[in-house]
Length: 275
Image (tube, rainbow, N blue to C red; front, side):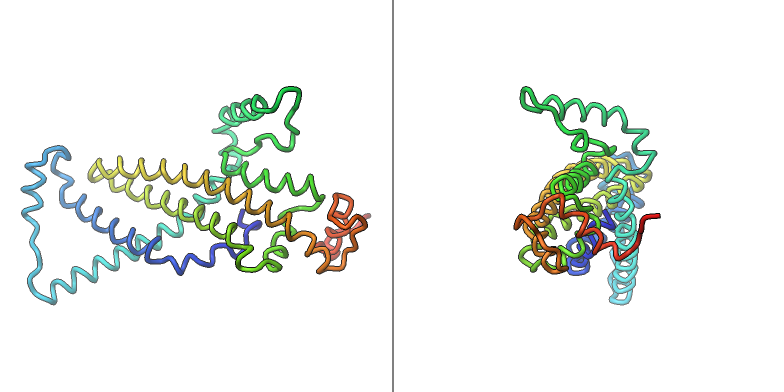
């Protein structure tokens, strides 16, 4: 996915407040709370209230500034860690690793049976369109690649950066939105892991973390489905323009699989040659 979608994460900095700063502050508060009440039974509300009543609120401006500064540093550090952890999560969800395939192979077999069963009577699903990744998220992206290869005879990973440059901001919007939703879901999953760790101090935090992770996976699946559809759609409407931009004549007035090798040769720039 990293190779297929260059430049789509550029808006993350613009959403720092929503995606990192506010969740970081919330996490710092939960962390401090969990540390303060970790010795008190979580369901003993009377004891929790008494423990919270023992909190000493700084009255001097200097003390308030120190507490606010420490809290801001903790929140910022946690936000940075969550942002870094979200990247391997986003890659892991694509289900390309051997470990993922080994662990989730039974689920893959079940998904293959479901896809075949959903085919109309008298029809079979082409082998290339059957699930092949360990996760549904990975298959949504893979399916876009396979459909483009079948229809046009080109590798999506090679033509996509050029199609992106040829597209206007409005044409990119649907793809960008789906990618933003996917990265936001991965970031939410990273925060959920933090709450699971805080659960070692106060177990209700782990419950919250589990709920957040499940919701993040569900959101990532929806975003990946929309992302695959958006990528395929943008390829359909811009591939003809790419062929014209690099000087590939089209005999039929549209891009066919027979035109794919000619475009591949131009984009390869002599990377390979016959022996």
